[in-house]
Each structure stands twice: as C-alpha cells, then as structure tokens.
Length: 168
Image 1: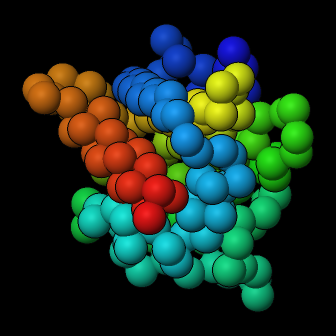
Image 2: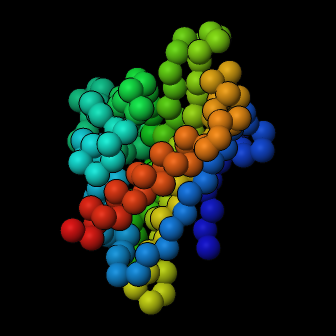
C-alpha cells in the first residue's frame, strides 16, 4: 500500500504531535470519496468540526496545488495552503495535503500542521482512506499529551462522516 509524502519539517517522529487514521471500506471507490474531500465547502455537511471554508486569490471551490484557503475546525481559525495535489487517476492513489497554521509566527500559540489524505482503490471493489497529520508548536506538545487523543478522535469523525456521505 502507498504512504503519505512528507515534506521536510513535518516528518512523523520529528514533530511535536502525530496522528494517523485509516479505514478500508468495501463498496466504495476513490471516485465516490474524492468529490466530497476535494470541496471544503462540503466538509461541514458531513463533518461537524468544520466550518466557514473559503478560498483566497479567486481560487476554489475545489482544492488544487498551491491553493490558499481558510476554514475553522473545533472553533479555531486555520489558514492553509495545498502542498500536494494529485487528483484520482486509475491505478494511482489520489493525494491531497495542506500546510495549515494558526497564531503568529514565533508566538506561544503558533501551531503549524501538515494534514495529508491518501485515497486508493483496492482489489475487490474496496477503497482505502488514510489521513495523517503532524503538528509543530507548543499547542501540539499539549495535544500530544491529551487522553483521549482529540486529533485521532476528530479525524475518525471526519472519516466516518466522509464514508457515510459517500454511501448516501
């Protein structure tokens, strides 16, 4: 199976926090999942911790390489820029990653994340959805200590909603 492509500064094990969620689902394909993930305005329809998505620079409504966008998650404002974008192609995994940040550079509340998604079709009419996130900054250090892990739980909710929306 394929893996996430990590840019320097965001490689798991060398960051302040890391989480990973993965599911394999029968009866769905990448083509069922991608349109829901690729359009941030749709996220709140299946993931309650997402709101107010908007694009900058006359981009959107779909993600694309280099696109700057904004959304809120768990009530926090997140500025983001797509760092990897590979739309679905038969036989290859679809990929989208973004660098997201909140807080002023150098401040104690600064948080930098790399959130990555990989979606690939598997044999037997199954789809694999992998999402992983690394985080840097003092807030990430605190998040890494939290039990239960809010990032793993939040991303699982996002995946579960994504799958339910694709099935409906």
